[in-house]
Amino acid sequence: MKPKELYLTDFSLWELLLNKDYKNIRVLSFQTTGRVAPYGLSDCQDVLKKRGFSLKIVNLENKTQEENFINTVSATLDFRPHIVLTIDTVGLVPQIFNILGGIVYISWFFDNAKNFIIPSVYLNPPSPYYYLFCWEKNNISLFKEKNLAHVSYLPYGINENVFYNQNQESSEFSSIISFVGNSLNQNRREIIQAVSQKYSIDVYGDPGWKEIENNNLKYKGEVTNRKELSLIYSSSKINLNISPPQAETAISERIFNILGSGGFLISDYKAGIENLFSLNKEVVCYKNKKELLPLIEFYLKENEKRLLIAKNGEKKVRSTHLISQKIDIILNNIKENRPAPKDIENFYHELESNKVYANPFSQLGVIFAGRKEYQTAFKCFKKALTIDPKNQLALQNLEQLNKLINNSLGI
Image (tube, rainbow, N blue to C red; front, side, top):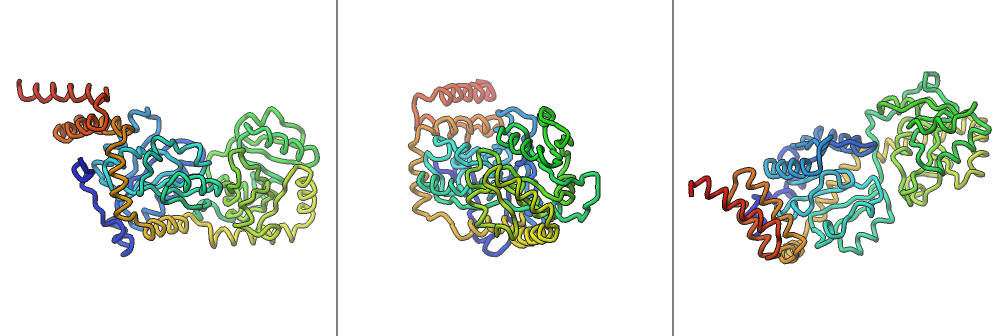
């Protein structure tokens, strides 16, 4: 069974991209829960809508893993997307996409990708239709070594309609120093406590910050929306960034959002930051607590220098790090890196003899049976048994399907 027997794939994507015929390009994406992914997804989706893409969003909120799987596969069969776009691996069912054939699926990793890529799912065999973009530059060589064909470095981009300079130094969110983030990282706690020994600092995030409150350290609660977040960044004399431990060289979204809001930023140093910003001209960095405190003292005194660096950082972000620009990079990468026919042929040859795919074929058969597409369901179960004659999921479902067909025929 070839993919085209299951799915009438429209292989015109590259011609449509070349001609910028976006209204005829179908993109499947997702709605989910979390701290970063929901906003990253909605920002990408907003850009695609404005460009005129045909967009379908699968809601994954507050559902079981099985429900999400069924909903995603059903939406794929109904909508027949050219592209599936997500953050990290939210909503992806790569083995099903591979079976159906010709679906370009895109992961933009905001977290460290090596914590998400499961070898048996994404690398066995690696699909020529999978395009992976990483914040973490160290991931690039790792996945190229695993024979993933399309792996690129792509740092964050801001939604310029959310994060902008609100020019309000006097507001309920005014701070001498502020930090927004969770309290679970011990390094963060230690740095915030060290700063509070000498300076007033306002902290926003989870209630765990209450445990270390003191006369200078004030817990201001959770930030409920991004407009409020941008106002905090605009209204603070100094915004601190303390990166999460999983970020090896990656520059977190907090850096871009602070600078995009016109805020002055002192961030912990990451090797990747110098590739994106000019140190001491657009952003200021520290390498340890001993370096941080003198920097705070200096820039609280030097108002003009602080404001100039903030202005330069804002200009850089708004000229080169908008979410719309990042979407352009993703689309251009796909357009310029079309899978070669030989790579596609080799991929499907390997797929159809790989025991890992017996269960996905069976799972797809179950969904086709639920849609009363019994002939296609039968083909899926038979294909699963061709790959693995002892596959119990296929054997059980094929038996149930035969009973269902016989009952419907009155046999």
